[in-house]
Image 1 (cartoon, rainbow, N blue to C red):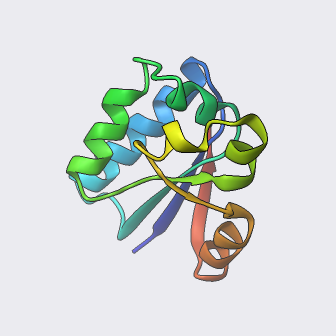
Image 2 (cartoon, rainbow, N blue to C red):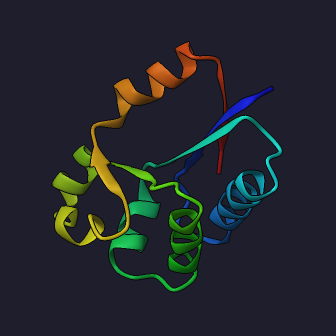
Length: 109
């Protein structure tokens, strides 16, 4: 069975299909595993409490998936503390590489 790495970067409506797919793939067991990484502008939107995305973060948490957000971007832009409420903060470059080594299929939004 396939394992998927969902990387969400967009801070507009383009991010919604990524969240929707990840939630439904976990809920309906479409794949063996789903991991979600927030990487880029989406981090700022979530840290600022953007209501388009927060319900999806909560749904992921309810399903046992806590998204990982890029620590470097959060540090540079000064929203690391507020983002910690919604995601695990890590340096994601190496994390992405490890998932790819484990044959996760990347999907980017």
